[in-house]
Structures are given as C-alpha cells and as structure tokens.
Length: 403
Image (cartoon, rainbow, N blue to C red):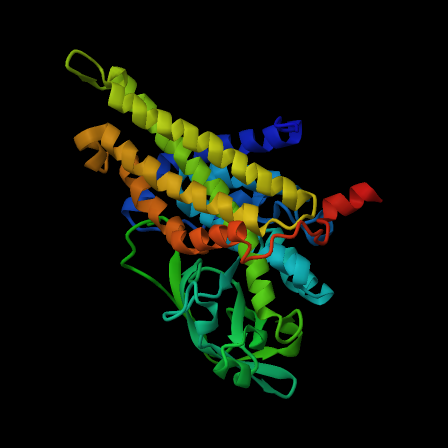
C-alpha cells in the first residue's frame, strides 16, 4: 500500500494552501465577526478548478480524483469551515450526484456551468421537522401534465440564499408518503428563478459565521419533467448516494480543522510562559497536543482509505461514515483542547481557536449525527447492516484508465 501523494496531489495541496493563506486567512476574522459571506470567493475557487474538481473535463470540471477532493477539503477547512462547506454542498452533494444520476441534458444544462463556477449549487433535504429521519420530510411533488408542482420548506441549507440551482427531494407518491415508504421520494433540480421559489438567511447561527446558511420555500413551484433526477421513486437512493459524497468532504475537512487546532496550540505553547518556562513543557499541555496529533493522523488515514475505495469504484458507505464520525468528533475534542491550551486567551476573539470551537460543532450534527453514525457502525459489526464489497460504477478517470 502506497501512502505517498502523487506530484499532482502535492501541487494541488500546495496551491490551495497558498491561495487560502494569501487571500482568505487575513480576512477571515473580520468576515466571521461581521457574519458576512463573501461571494467573491466563488470566482477565485473556480479559477483554481475547485468547484468542479472531481467532475470530468468533458463536463467542464478539472477531472481530478477523490483524493484531490479530500485534500482540497482539508486545506479549505484549515482556513475556515465556511470554505469547505462550499465544497461539500456544491462540488460533492450536488455536482457528483448529477454526474452519476443526471440525464445528459441535465449535465449539459446544470452540471457544466456548475463545474465551471458560472453557477452555484446546493442540496435540499433537511426540513424544519426532518433531518436524520429522511422519511419525515413533508415537501410534496404533485404530477400535473408535463411537470411537477413542488410545495414545501427546506431548512439549514448551506448557500440557500446565494445558490442558483437546488437538488431537492420531495414525495412524488402521496400514498407512499402516508406509509413512510421511501420508494415514494423523488429528486428534482429547482432553479432559483422558478416562480414561487423564495429563500432567506438564518441570522442567529452560533458558528460558521462567514458562511451562508438559510432556508428556502417552494409555493407551488412548477418544475418540468426534464428536471426529475433519475426515475420517480429513486429519490431516497439518490439522497443516500449524495450523502456518501458530502460526508467524505466533511471528514476530510474536519481533519483540516484538527490540524489547525494543533498548529495554533503548538505556536501558543512555544510562546506562552508560566512558572518560568514555555507552557509546552508542562506535561498536561503536551498530552492535549499529542492527542491532536494522533487524531489528525488517524482521521487522515480514514478519509484517504475512503478516497481510495471511491477511486476504485468500490462501495464505501461504511468507510466514509466511519471517517466522518471519527474526524468530526476528534475535531470537537481538538477545538476544546485548543481553547484550553490558550487558557483565558482561548476565550478571546483575538485568537482563532474560539472560531474553531464554534465551527466544529456543526459537523458533529449535519450529514448524519454522531449518534446516527455510531448506530451505523455498530450495525455493520453486528451484521444488521450489509457490508458487501460490491463494485459500483467506476468514476470517469478509472474508466478511462481501463480503456
């Protein structure tokens, strides 16, 4: 097993790290304090090829693999979680799902401009009364001639107030809705400009303040048949596929946050002196930093394992879920300890660790809570959940290699 990155991977890692450090890091404190999302980030990310990083070149993307997607996610969250969120909802949850499940026309009309960064996309599953319980969503899609009429509300949607395209899930079979049968769910592409669509920004968030999070409402929004993704009733499968992509970026991003906590703590521990010595010489401070280092190394190996499986076209739900669970919980521990290492200064907005602490909590909740992932992993071990090493459709770069 080769753990070395390719030259292409190293160049990507370096370019994202240098861009983030130069263009975003000096401003992120002010953006966070002002609760301000900077739309100017999109064209910069597009120029780096990040918005279509794992989309094939024939569909407007950079044609890179899942390791590249993970490296970019880790580097972005090292700067701030709000940057990685863009990768999660736009590049992973939406673009990679359209790549696999979308029609040729949907790829031409929606995926290509998204991969090029000309349009921004997001994912609409969560509702005010439904998160982990997907069958609890209330949005409906009523068939009317050559179109569907969608009515419902989506909540806690990243980029809700700035995205152009939305991958939306709704009940297209109302009898199955009554039975909570997921075979009644379908997926649709909804455009911001469709009549009856409106959105708003959530103002009272606790963390990820430099990102846009909000809601959108659909009041009898007419969606053409051509915007049905997959076939009627495949919405649940599509949603779960999308979550495998999104959870992967969350895992890699949380790994970057652990590294950010480690680096900030090391810097402070070498500078701050108590009892006549640098606090880095105190045993319990060393213990916290050592935990950050071990968590970082373990989390990185977990997401790299998931990336390898994805590159090989192998089923990876178990491995991706484990990486997401471990990395996000470890990032919460790292952020808490980073504040502790900084002592009273950790409670000050002058240092970044308070922002890390506020940002890390979201990932322990969204795209499968900590508790949901615990149950999933236990079910795999107990045999209640299938763990077949089945081969999925190979990603485009692997198909090209085999031909």
